[in-house]
Image (cartoon, rainbow, N blue to C red; front, side):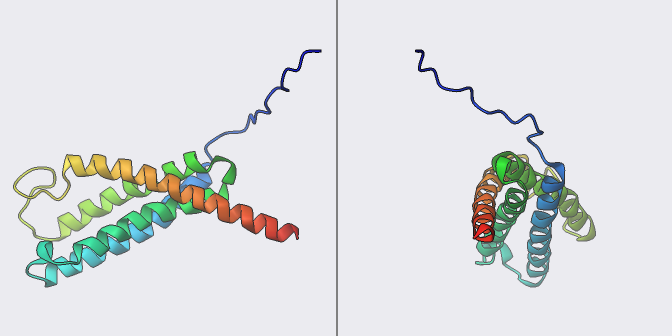
Length: 157
């Protein structure tokens, strides 16, 4: 007798569930827009905003937004939480960039968008946010899939 293992079950369904990615990206975008608006208001009203302590909680709020987007996608599709969570986090960032450009256009800052002494969007920051958005989207997707699994287990009882 050949003790070979049985073939692994494969799922031929799509790995990316676009409604989950879209909903997660919109949830993340809401958090990012809120943090951006608060930052713009504080920057306008505080003379030394860059040296104040407000930068750190606002950055944490942005990180939280990426995770929230992944969490939403992971709750909707717990079978593929990493892929959908990462895409939701990146989607939130991609949707946030035009909002950030709009804030830059409305405010009279006398600085360039991508260049100059203190640009609004530095290329290195854009790349860094893409990587962080994907990573925290995956983490949020994992947490969302676990909470969805617990909810399903509780419903079966």
